[in-house]
Length: 145
Image 1 (spheres, one colour):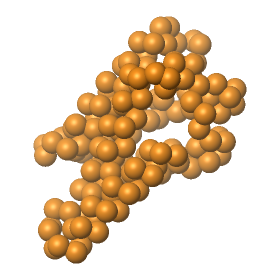
Image 2 (image 1 turned 180 degrees about the vertical axis):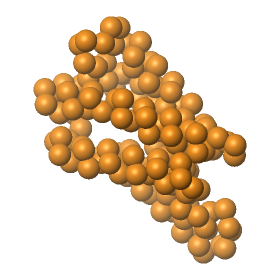
Image 3 (image 1 turned 90 degrees about the vertical axis):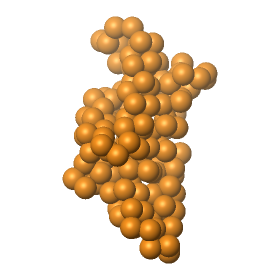
């Protein structure tokens, strides 16, 4: 739930600042959503490298994938790179598309965690699916611009 809160708070606050100050760049949903996503993915990327979250994430990886630890490291690096890409002027749209695809690819691990009560203790699958749809929608807002 923390990633959703970070996304909502950062997006909402930066949008409010844009509206109150008239600063045109922040007076835009795609720009402020990119900032919210960057904050969210920076936070979630960090979890891939620190205990106990790293071990919990490794436990979520479906068993048919080899070397779960390497998969968690890779996805953490990709999330961090996506967060940086969202902040660099030429790359937000492509970063949002890549993060959209990454979210789709990683969702089976969330399904497995919810069904088997393994790994990061998140939320029931129906609620997790709604939250995932919000994350995908936020990526789409940035990608479409």
